Length: 301
Image 1 (tube, rainbow, N blue to C red):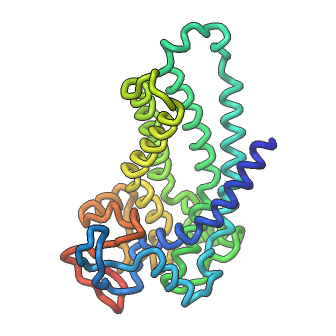
Image 2: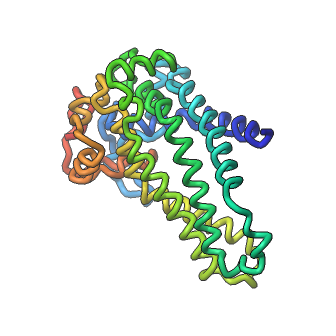
Image 3: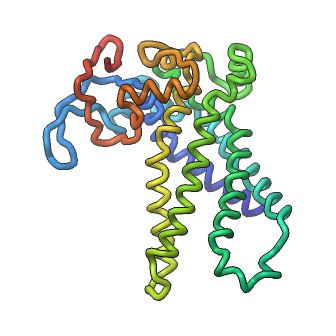
């Protein structure tokens, strides 16, 4: 219980600190660009047309809504983080307790079955994450819609309970789980990819006789996690877009996005446009080539 409480406390602190960054990222993912491209330099010193980065975008939000505006949607996100941590901990504990303890009986087989151990641990983690995601997704949907309200200056979503009632009244129970499938798929693929890559690197690429072996394995885990998150980013983007699509908000309707039939339709549309990585970087944002910027509509075409 103490571990869960400390995880909730630490997670809440990190959520508050990172919320402005997520806010800007979501607006960029939706396609909202408050300023036209300006001439700047990339990391190699070349002159390119760039879109506003994180700090310029944050200043724009502060200019309109004040510093408190950077924390729009924070309350439902905190609720999601707290509930998700508790559910994750409880489900993981239940899964571990329900499995027979084979380590004490077959301890001599530990080295030979290390891959099986990785698969078992990953399966437990997958079950816990999926349960937490399923329970907290309605809060995630509300968080995103509270943020996207900035584009059209709507006030549909304010409180957590009132927002849930609004979503249920307009979209039904499925509205509270909009974008759930690509989010789950992205989490599952990222988890398995990260753990399996880390296992093979630690087993076959790193020698056990090397000094600082534990540090090297920790680095490999971080690198594989970053690599997996890059590969599965399109699932995050599609999930967030589907959570706000056709929700009555300006950011979920044309010209920002067409009304998608499904998340697969959204994926295909973004793929055709070359926008599956939109919002993945908030620094040195190069303006897309061959697209015209319409200032009145704040949108690329």
